Amino acid sequence: MDLFNLSGRVAIIKGGARGIGFVIAKGLASYGAVIVIADINSDGAEEAKIVIRSLFFTLYHIVRVSVYACHRSSL
Image (tube, rainbow, N blue to C red; front, top):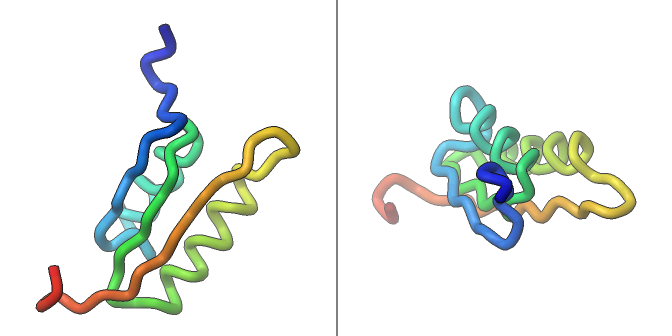
């Protein structure tokens, strides 16, 4: 059993556009998780999505990353 196989799992990362959240998003994506980045910085979140997809996209492994802009009051 592969303990780090996250295929089919969804990870929601609040504040995933930069810093620790971004590093966590990259790490989870590297193990196959579907990534959802929720951040108040929508431009930064879009950039993070592009970076994560470009790092982990291969012919057989398509990385799914979604971005949701949100405000603190909606969390």
